[in-house]
Image: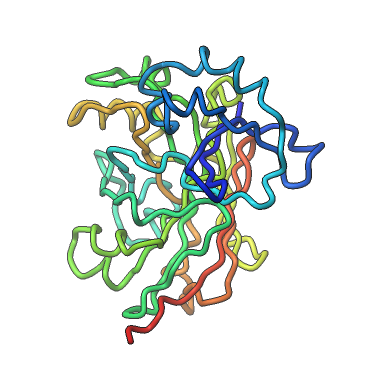
Length: 291
């Protein structure tokens, strides 16, 4: 099933996405007030393990078109967003690095992400705004010291992720954090696809387009460290909790590595499409100049 976080103009809500073929741009069954009182967001629903309990009320809610709704990041308030860098072999080579022995990790803050259809913002202090399409994992059950063999048991589902990067700030030092945490430079969505629909994430295929041109394309099976290994590794240095988001890395073809570099500009449309999940779409705008 597909679950999304949306803004209905009054409140941040969540619901069940379905009827994608019958309703233009899809339909949503918004969680009724009784559910939102107990579980105000998807993170609290996952933490309580209450999705099976909530399904009858969700499926009884009326379907409405998504037109007029604004999508929020799938998990609007994650306790942590972990990102794996240089994790596809082609991207490792284009970035001039050796194959790592362990995953390269950095963090993003929640305010760096916007929902599907919302604008991403090129900061006024840089023109080196780069695209990175990724598959993201959403944790559904607390994971601590888990093995790769049991890692998928702790996953709620998967979504698309745009790890927008401010390359000059990313490369100030060997630490990525500054270039990855400008506000509203990335996206997560459009919805969470639960594991019953994605039994094997390695079978998925990812594509990133800018203004319709395919710039990144790779099977998820090309990851240097796959989903199981990423969860195993991360669960050993921290406790992964329901609603935590892990972006798994981007394929080759980023703007930084092209000749000449392909930076995002105001007016560009960026799409991250993953088979079996959907399309995450954003338009680029420039940050307003300070008065």
